[in-house]
Length: 439
Image 1 (tube, rainbow, N blue to C red):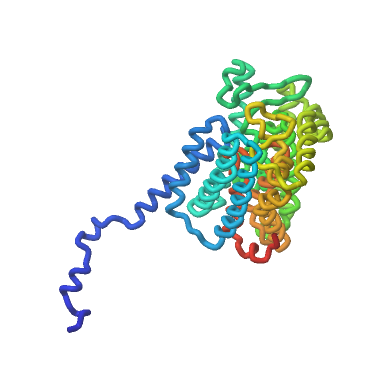
Image 2 (cartoon, one colour):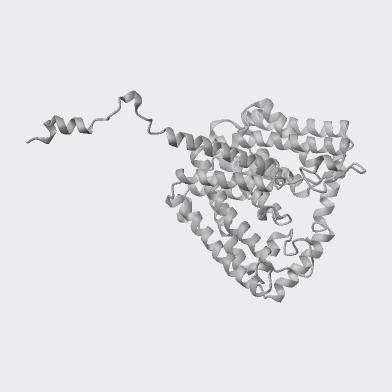
């Protein structure tokens, strides 16, 4: 009997429902994708625009985005390379949590270390991989354009409310908020300045990624105004650092050969220059902010090593490193200088504090994923294979990474996106450079 001609077998294999009534195979995946992108945008809205202002909702949004990212996750060799380096950092963290416990580190400190060094980076890695897969880096940068405008608007709202209604009106943005407008200087206490370090470095390095000319003109001017009125040295110097890195890397990008140098200057350089000039003129004309006073304050602060508090902190951390011989004192263990009375084991000089906590070898393992990324991007640029989108992410990352030396942004779970998203996007898209890039 020929099974191919058996009508009973053929009829049993046919669907019981008419084609019009069959459920669509991709309907569930499409719904999950939309839910993930919605939760991810909400997470970035909280983490980029109002970081640390709503920690509980941010944590909930992160957990939701993580759970929705898992169904579409693909553990290819690209992601496994980054996860392998991440596992090495986990081992270092666990070992030095034990060492810290042996040196009477408080349990609350060890719990926070586990959350910030183990749990939070894993969640961000999976979420970033989901964004890279479901949205794409180019669309993600479009999101950053929108978020940058919201960041600038939040800064303007902060100044307006503080100056008209007092500190209580801006307690949502920062508890114990303050604005300093004395003798031409401008400074404010806002968590969003951490996000703006990355965004200023990225967009001043790659203004061409802001497609609309008017939008590009407005956003660059707003970012410059936010930086100059922030009083934050790390944010102010992120603009020249981002611009310089972008200028150096632009000839090495894959898009460079498509247009002439004159056309690129007219299309991107000239609007950026005009936006900067207009922003400076408006600040001088309509505010009490003196650009020269702000820049003098920044240069003085840099020359003094970040101010008296950071200088004393550095001395104590250096003494602690010499006392433990560079082997590490353990997580949750502080030095003589107390930076935060509530959390005395925390320090703004994160690089020095990391060497004190986990030693030279542990610090190298912590930095290894970033070092591989930096070396890989440089090799891509030398080979003229660096896309503009990765130029943007790299320049933003470099500014944020340098700022982490004097600011604890990398230890805030809401701000770790600045360090994780560029790494994940590069590790997934360019695994070939990992095979030949020395650690």
